[in-house]
Image (cartoon, rainbow, N blue to C red):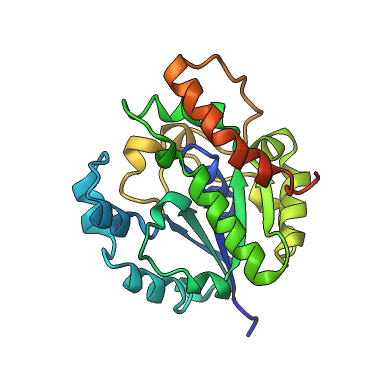
Length: 243
C-alpha cells in the first residue's frame, strides 16, 4: 500500500481556499477535509460567526479530538488527505506538534482582494479575522523546525496559469500531476462544511479556476487593515513557487 500524504493547506478566508479544495477533491487518490478546527475555534473564542450553531454541531469542539481525527486513517482508503485549514483557527493553547507529521503549504492572496471579498460576507472585520499574522507565525514555525521555507503558492498565480502552478505545487509536495485538478462538478459537494451556503456561492457556480479579478479601491478602514496585513503577505510571498 502506498504511503499516505497529508497536506495541510494554510490560508485565511476568501483566499481561493475552497476552489483549491475542489481541485484536490477531483483527484481519484485524494480525500479532502473542510476547516476541521472551525468548531473548536468558535468554542475557544466564543465568537459569533454566521451559522455558528450549525458549525458547532457538525464537528468536534475539542482541538485534541480534531488532531486525532486528521492524523487517523484516511477516509475511503485514499492515499492523499488534503486538509483545508484557516490559520486564524489555531488559537493559543491549540496543539501544533501534529504539523510535524504533515506536509504544510501556505496559500496566499493579496490583502486588498481578501478584504474586498470578506467585507461582502461580514459587516465587521479585523486583521485577526483574515489570518495573515497567524499564517506568518505558522510559516515561521515550519521553517524553524525543518530548516527551510515551506511551500508557498499565490492564488493569483493559480488563476493566471492553473496547470503550470498546480503542476509545480504537486511536484513540490511529492505528488504526480493530475489534469483532473483543473475542473470539478458544479454545486455543493459532500465534503463541504455546513457553512457552505453562506460562504461558497461563487464556488458553487464554478467548474474550474477563473482568471484574476481586478482589485478595486477599498474604503479607508479596510485599506488600513490591508496595510497592516501587507508585511506578512509580502514576506511569505517572497518564497512562493515561481518567485
